Length: 501
Ligand code: TRP
Ligand code: ZN
Image (cartoon, rainbow, N blue to C red; front, side):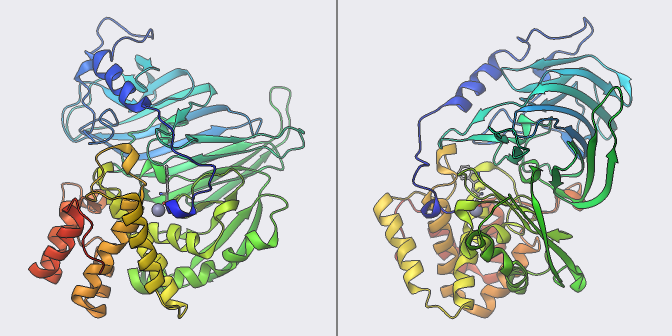
């Protein structure tokens, strides 16, 4: 979402919850009253990933390979939730214990390769500690079972909560819904995860809901089971999705509710021209004006893959939601509020499937890398419609002059989704294009979207796509030369607003 498109009801407010949580974490990882054992390793040995803006998130040296997630929702539209998650975890260094991010319900069972293991849940710090060491290079399957109420995480700037969303059903007519809106750190409100974008993983998501309710998640649908009512449980509808390409935790899509599925003709934009199946989901009674932009999904996907290269997932579509939230680029299934249902926002979220969901962030302070390319895609789309884009870039520039601006790397969570990240970021790319010309710019965009800026790492098959601001600058210098890099660097680093490109 671009700030300009934000509903007027979404005004920044002042909550410093994350700063507070950080202080509590460093001070008292062991403070929670929870199950523990005398031989437990000292919990303070778990070091977070070290994110600049979210210093408590994740565990350094922990590599989540796969999450097998089972969620059960018996009353859609409420926050009641039970879960059974098995994470396949690998240590890239000796870990004295496992520390996952989790703000969800009380964990009742923890298993290590299927056997009970001591654990500790620190609700204040949002950490679930599994008290067993994992030596460097080894793997373990950690299972956590929980039931109760999903966690609540207020956004530090905007008046909504992150993570598990509940859309109530006051008339009790089966209209209640739940979905995930997790960026940046809300996935931990409903699943225990290593909650940092630099540790993507594959997912299998199984959703159990009441009969007649739709359930959908990121990935390909691989199984549907309908169980009749029995003496010990009500009838249930269970659907499994397989997300075979690793994704950051914040991009996991989950939608539960009375959704209508609409299939569209596939488009051949996958690797090697492979067909991508298209399916959208709408709440009951969605008016035709809201549905209209989604009819262009195939056209948008085809156009963007012309610029960025093969589409990275197997399926695509949008799930339309009724609350006034920003739109979110959930993997393979963008989460689109009714109020953001335009071709412009759909183009933006679709572009994130490359920029954010395939090329991944090293640090949350680099989030402009996601937002700038997604915003620039809006200009490319306008150009493709035969429109003059000068008014658009003028408007971006005027917004920055009016609101003020800053260097592109965010210094606080409040800066992550501001006009500098979106409009200045997009203008930085436009300035680069003007410097090098359309042909070189096209090659540059495609190379970056396909992972060209990523620094090779120890686990190339899964981490090769992680980039930071320095990687983009180095890639620019490598592919476009010194002069081009200087132009981009000025837009990245200058505290003033560089001249309009
Ligand atoms: N990444 C989203 C988009 O631009 C926007 C977004 C996600 C957001 N989470 C947010 C905006 C939290 C403000 C606050 O498509
Ligand atoms: Zn965006």
